[in-house]
Image (cartoon, rainbow, N blue to C red; front, side, top):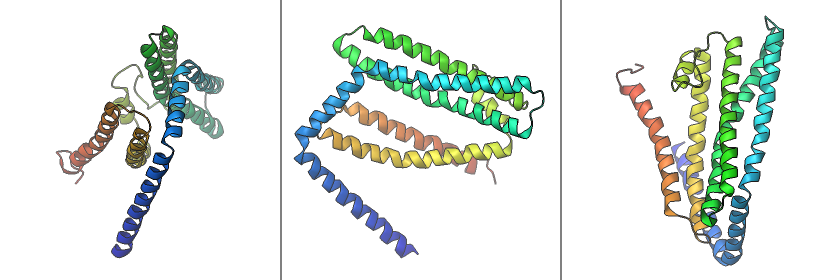
Length: 247
């Protein structure tokens, strides 16, 4: 079994090395064309940051509609039956997922806007700043209303989105099954990002051969990777060997 695992690992490393060599040869032989493509793509993205931010409004509208529908069901039925409860719970879960995704989207788009506006000294950034503020307020409202409606079908839930202790209080009010789901989801997220970060570094290194990337990009991504690892390893060690050891 150990021999098979070792051979599988060695084969994976060889394949990765071959693919890396092929990618390097391809990039070098097409460096001018790729450089033109990257420059064109970069300019297109940062010049259309306002459009990208406006696209982000669509999911927020959907989230608001979901909350409205869930609220109407709760208001019309003093005691939800199993079907109504499941339907309402799903809509609220979907509504709460939308701002979680749209917050990083809004920051990314505003970052594109800042890159373009500060480079050419454009007042265009004022429009994007207004959109950014509107989206941040909208996201907060969706989160707040979703949590408040969720409390109506789960009276044991505690916490206020506007309170900086919200996540701690909300987690404390979850039962064992919900905590297990959160734990498994966090572990899957950790595993996913542990694969994404090395791939991202390889992609950035390849891009560097045809397009300038600031070393601070590598520093930021590396720091995020390091923070992710430490934020997992330190609590894990404390839970296993600290004063609150599980043993």
